[in-house]
Length: 322
Image 1 (cartoon, rainbow, N blue to C red):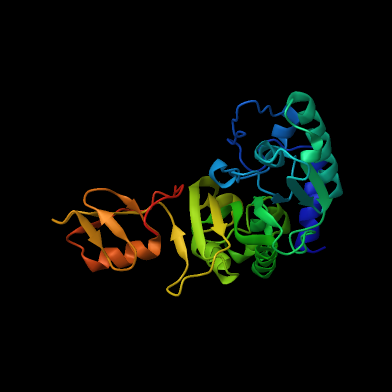
Image 2: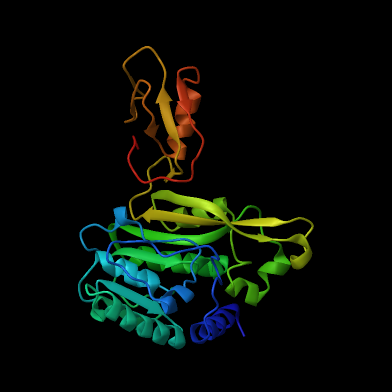
């Protein structure tokens, strides 16, 4: 049995017998006016964060959700795309598709605004998404891509890039590792299916996104996820996993490299009213301006006495000079 077959078997099990807190023991559904989440759907909340960011969901986008789970985030996306097939949810596991359909039928009774036709559930997987090229505005996945081995992750990201329209967004939430996960844990297929042993480091994770062509990446949140203790998992020291929520844009990669926003700002403290670096960044004296990590590094080296560059907050929701 391959690791993907093990994962499919595992999620067939948890679709039929929900495991509360399988991924995020402290997660709760996004609260939106008029949105009610059933207990059944909440029990199958197998995500490690959230991919539902209202700022990315204006104008009723077509959303492709990869790995439907219990249907919770598909329902949340439908809140913003209230039309037939506004959300297309893809999952290779029949039991999971059936469970999501049942949960969405309950949601239709609990939410007068929701019609089950808003979410179209299709059989398929991340490596062969059942939609045409450049046909969706948003692709989203929560705590799925971390299961994939690097070569398969690259295939999944290429598929997401293929189906996105130019300027489209890939919304992801995945565990990342604060240091490389030992080989003996990576080889444990069940731990990988449980989102505990397949995580990449932050640097590896973002590089995969850049390698397939995403020119801009924005970190929405980064927070502790799980601790793999040394005794239980056969390591010399404990290993912290973090949860990373990100939005990646299908835009061209600039000549000087992709723009990654992690919440850094640049602040001009000189005598002039404005500072212009000649590369499109104009800073008003004393006013923080959000900048990507690349620009932060350049500005920090340019005039260290007159430019303050703050550290990453790991929370960024747009704006700034880049």
